[in-house]
Amino acid sequence: MSDTDSFIDEVTEAVRQDKLWAAFKKWGWIGAVIIIAIVGGTAWNAWQKEKTQAEARAFGDMVMAAVNGDTTGADLAKITPDGPGRTAVLKIMQGDAAIEAGKPDEAIKFFDAVSAEPGLPASISDLAKLKAVIAAGDKMDAAKRDATLQELATPGAPYRLLAMEQQAAAALSSGDKEGAISIAQQILEDAGLTPGLQQRATELIVALGGEVPTQPGQGAPALQE
Image (cartoon, rainbow, N blue to C red):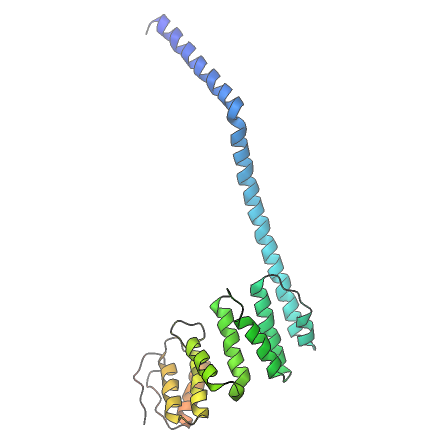
């Protein structure tokens, strides 16, 4: 390479560096803003997460203090929850407190208020419906009770087996012994069976003179007398 070519290359490189520096001086602030935005956004998200967790802990602490106190219903009523989810949970607990105080009608109002709230997760709304059925007992209109339990016993519903247990109790209450046995046997055949529910369903079948499936929770065939 000649001296002339080297000189031209050096000049070209110098011009390129000058243009780069000029561009950096003109537009470099954009990169700085982007970096600040990323760092600031990360810090904001971390703060929001910590704030949410702190609020959840505070809500839980207040609820537990009320539950463990001597005036649970009154103490729960003093709590001001933030958001529909916590409001619904608080109402369910107020309903439970009313049940403990021997006030089922008051409890049902709390449960119905939750089940009527739109947009809640099924784990909350279905729980309120089930508790309302249990609290009402024979006082609930039979058609409404049966429709509610049928909805709650739909495959995939969060409290399906507990709803089926109530269906068995309703069948027995109406004099349908065979229907109660059949439902209890279906409960025992379900893979989601819990030990407590297994014991209750088994005791019901035995008390009514039915046949207990040979392999509870494993899909054994249902047998009846």
